Image 1 (cartoon, rainbow, N blue to C red):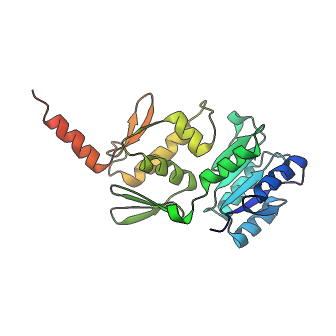
Image 2 (image 1 turned 30 degrees about the vertical axis):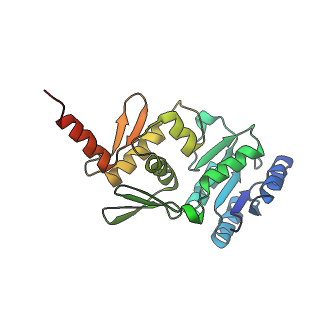
Image 3 (image 1 turned 180 degrees about the vertical axis):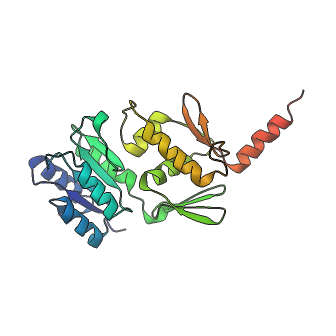
Length: 233
């Protein structure tokens, strides 16, 4: 299988060079010096992942990240942000803050890259095309945002399991900062609007108060309902 394509956006500084050297050993690496160049290259090269090294550019990178996200909406972005974490407002799929190693960067890339032999996740009524970020349910196909697709994939791979909020923030947003989880709440609401007949009273994606969320499959719901029905009075 061919190596995945990675687009690294940043200035030519020693730290950026260290990242580039590590990435060249694993991926087809393309370099861009600024946002406009990166958008043009992304449209041409179709990378699997974009890395925005805003620290090397001496900027927060949030405006550039939004431009890239709008220009190539199907490509996940790793944003190396100058911080502080609590002030970051980026549409990127993953945020990294210094200090971190090249290994952590590679791990973030690997979590976002979806290979050809693992494009679909099927569970119950749901069929998620990971690469295209489309969800099919009841014969209808819906396009998902990158983060919503990653979030739903976690639930579909572990149906019936309670996933705590810290785990979801770490896996989807690549942060362990729990000071503000409103973005997680918003994405949960978006998913419910897609999969639930009544999002206000969810049948599938349940809230486990004080912990996190659980995705119940129809057969699991039927088992639970039957168990309740047969409890002796």
